[in-house]
Image (cartoon, rainbow, N blue to C red):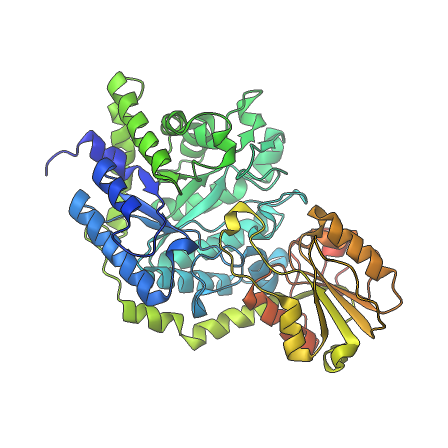
Length: 534
């Protein structure tokens, strides 16, 4: 076999995004032709009906193979909940915290159902032609004001996160895709979204060794080369001292902690190199070089042609100048080749559009996911009378419309719980927002107020105070992280749904109608306990 060229090896170290839903996509083709980019990431912008997506991925795989001699990694963020890129039919499933609540993971519940969800997701992605899933999240969300992790975490203890994360990853691998644990070395204890700025975790090393790091250490030890790691764009003070070096660019994080201390020999992917945390530090080319110097194998560049081109050119120039040893590129190339061989990517992938369509329409899988969503709904305090669902317009429900709240929730489908409740129960519905949250005058037998991460939104807190002071009984439903329960000082019932998707909204309505709230909240704190827990 002819030795690979330097340009070929660098192309294999790039994972790029593109804008279209069909091939040939001009940006994807140009990246392949000019820079031999060997891998691509798909977002909701690329994903349509199952059959069309399978055709896109199949054509993309064939095109890359003909140019490079290797099929591409086709990656996606398919975490579940609000972070779903493919959500047609049975492809939708609950997110991390909802799954954890459903199986009572925080009190030692069996995680087999999470493994089954992972297997379903893996099989679905393979049917669509994708082979890498940037999931599960292994962040331990210990900071209530964390704007970007929250319910994407399985809980706030390393034991809960490790058990659930390992189950999900094992299922994904059984389903045929490579799971990628994220965001190393831990994104749960910060209050800045790395899509926007540079977070800093200033916890001492002893605390990190007890909380942030155990899930990563334990899970990579169990799965080895059958999983990847995604780096986080955050500064870990215990490793960097006063230097502002994010994990993605840090030899201490990647080469030291992950490779040497944890013994990880698999692929290290970066989070998107175009995120604000890195853009504020250095240009794309310099960031790419520093990520490779740190020990990263594959650079994720999700959006623009220019950033991917600059990364490829900068790495090539760094090798030619002697800044980057050619052996460093060869090291990553060997890892990439080994994992592609494990995934069957030495030949092009040919997904069957008809099989993908049939899988999306699979009623048994869809029902399994719905039942798990129903099992997640948790009564945090008080009591809820299901008779309210039969009182029609005497009951008022106020809810925001779901929308992409953070950079990771790109193109999330819109959901309006108030409208769904009005259609099903004939309740008086009011859709509220920052621009319109005045309470309509009138007497109601009960108020149902839905909050979504209200700790970040004063207008929701104002609405809560107004309804808590009203004479009618009040039920508060949390459509985001259960930390919002700490804001509630007067309510007849507080219910956690953990996420705001069509799946969770339907599960919540079913719970209100039946009066059944079987979930167990995986977050600590008096108001984070399930009803009846001491």
